View 1: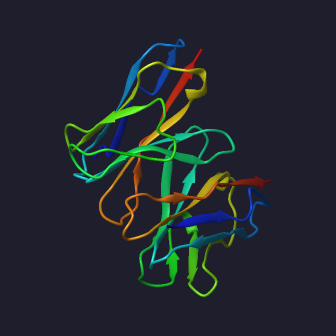
View 2 (view 1 turned 30 degrees about the vertical axis):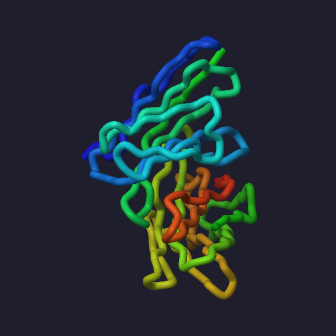
Amino acid sequence: NAGVTQTPKFRVLKTGQSMTLLCAQDMNHEYMYWYRQDPGMGLRLIHYSVGEGTTAKGEVPDGYNVSRLKKQNFLLGLESAAPSQTSVYFCASRMGNQPQHFGDGTRLSIL
Amino acid sequence: AQSVTQLDSHVSVSEGTPVLLRCNYSSSYSPSLFWYVQHPNKGLQLLLKYTSAATLVKGINGFEAEFKKSETSFHLTKPSAHMSDAAEYFCVVSDPYDYKLSFGAGTTVTVRA
């Protein structure tokens, strides 16, 4: 039972490059989330989705886009990476008011 | 809207002594509350959850938490700390009518031998 899988696990980008982070869950969860975690700042919500085809902005959405074309996948895109987006990114999913299940994270460095 | 305050950013204990991590919450409804643990370079793992059943909740690895509505608190305890408990702990609140959850800033636990 894989749970929540994030790819890639590590990535180094140059400023201005673009990339997509993939999150896949096999639990048939309706809700999916993208967070970023920075030292001393806890987890901050970037975007979330409450169902296939729907997305919404979280606390820190600027510079990111998302898509949820299939229920099991939630993609996070950086169109033009900036050093301020260096962070650890976590994907999570949940059903109803149950706890979130988290992936292992993607460590992204932007030079 | 809901919010969470973890009262200690860092807690240091000796191995074998009790651990107490304090969490206060604010919610307009009857919330669900969770504690997560994050070991270095790992994802978040659920320790326990409160979803309006028993107010004393038992979790994994000997942890438990007590929901106190009158004090709006959900403190996490463990009777005897182990070296493997060194990690960061997050208190999380979820309102039933909000898809989003609110995370506390985290408490880093250090365990001294």
